[in-house]
Length: 205
Image 1 (spheres, rainbow, N blue to C red):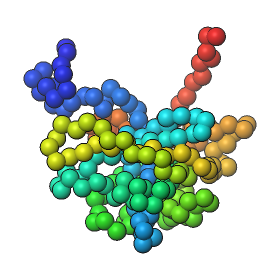
Image 2 (cartoon, rainbow, N blue to C red):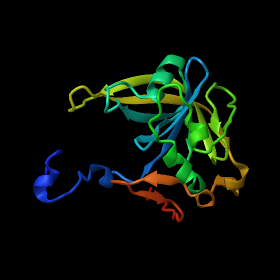
Image 3 (tube, rainbow, N blue to C red):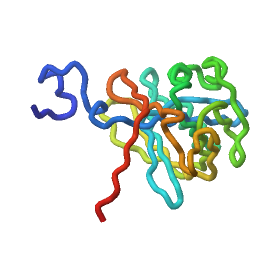
Image 4 (cartoon, rainbow, N blue to C red):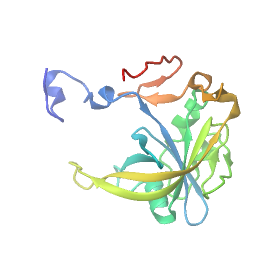
């Protein structure tokens, strides 16, 4: 089978499988603050590390389907220059999913999701209490991507990691043990996965 994007139904596929192929994808639980100090929290499955020295991450955001406006996370980051990425462990999977609610701008998703914020060290946005790790980030730039839907936009937001918080309980022999917090990732459709087993392979050179 071969098809081009947007023609999957011609081949009997109910949904475009692109996101099922590019998986698992880590979830960036992005917290920001608006200029009045109100927190916004949202999970992004188009999230990843993009460089190591200095460490930088990105998350990708489309605009709202109802009015084409940029989402709160992007608006806040571009206005204030800061954000925090909290890493999602298995125990917080339900709260993460709840925090994806589309609330009006200026409403805090943390209380609605049963979450509490904690102060960061180097940036203003709060961290999610209980998350196994947090990345405090400084905004670098936004890059607009192509979008085929009229009245909509696609953006990639980049940030440099200034500081990291790590729960001591997930450290084993000086290394982070992901099986202790079991990071949650996004697959295709409405499917998620939890990493609970790992194996190592040395490079051949």
